[in-house]
Image 1 (cartoon, rainbow, N blue to C red):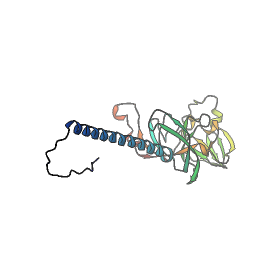
Image 2: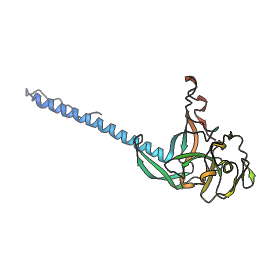
Image 3: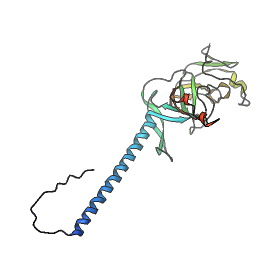
Image 4: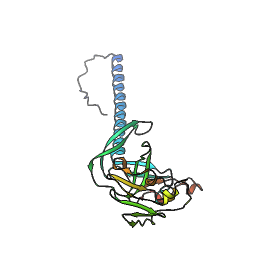
Length: 251
């Protein structure tokens, strides 16, 4: 911050100034500069928080993958970016204060400016229907109006088999006790309006629409589009980071 004062040159009259007064004035000016710096820092922090909150609510949000339900597409320890604008601009709702940065988080719903509809194959993050405090990530299989059915692990959409071998995994460990038949054989069911049928790519180890139903449009938070970091944490330290997954686009 620069001062705009000008010092005029006048003939020396021989007068003197009180040194105490002069010193006090300088100290006061110094205190004012300190206050200005503090104010500038405070304003910068507030602007940063507002900008971070705006980006988090309207543009993009980062998530970490804690489970293996989307293997092989997403691995445990992947850190991904989710576009909040993939399907349109959403009003922020249900804001909560928490410890972190930014210190406020808001759920979004009720698209007021629509860009497009979710498509089959999109990997979406949404609020878990049975506990909306939790976020889930799955792949869209059925669109509104589709008839979905599974026979012996083969998924049929409107009577046609879904060719998903390129991105799915089946290891058949039967970890979902008591639901094997529901997992491998279900339907036919019709997807309601404004709802979607989702499944994990790790078909045999995913709790998804086969067990708790459809995902409503207003519960979708965004579309996953990139892995920006991936932490393995196993083996030697050289292998802790999955370098080949950094910057990997999600399909």
